Length: 256
Image (cartoon, rainbow, N blue to C red):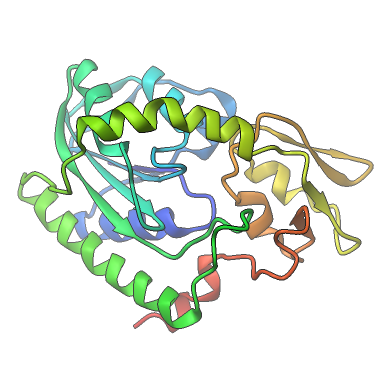
């Protein structure tokens, strides 16, 4: 079974490719995460967990969800990470977590995808040609990963060194607390009060008040709200006003 969480569509795209190649079931974890549903997930085939990477590790809300989740059936588990350039300690953390669950981690893949984190002055959005290149290249790599999974081969990505763990594990929560406040999120007059942002928020951080969304802490900065708004009415301070709000649907028709 292919399990995934996706905010702007990158990870969903990869999960769908792998599921198609393996003729396997696909499970979107968003609603389970939102509702805290950790009922047992069963699969005859190996589990494949597809996740984005935020600040060098998988999203903390997804990590907490998976830590509580029970799995039954096949004991093999693969990990596929989508990232803008660096997956950090994601592989090492997930493999350790699932080994403690008495499952058999079968390695991980790191797929470089279009940069979708628009709420930062440090991140420059990719140009359209680069976006399409990354999508086509990651699709090929996803099919290669699926081939290995079908034949029971391990996925191999770069080795995660102990120094990375020593630096990243204490660094990430500090960075998130200092650099990922929810207060700068706001809507413009284009907001139509559709509530899509509230529905998509994986941590139930958004509530509609008088027909307009409000954000509370803590925020995962997953970009699901800002990048999926149908009228592009959501902004993050003045950081995003001149940026295109990334969503993979804008480019799928241009992929060969």
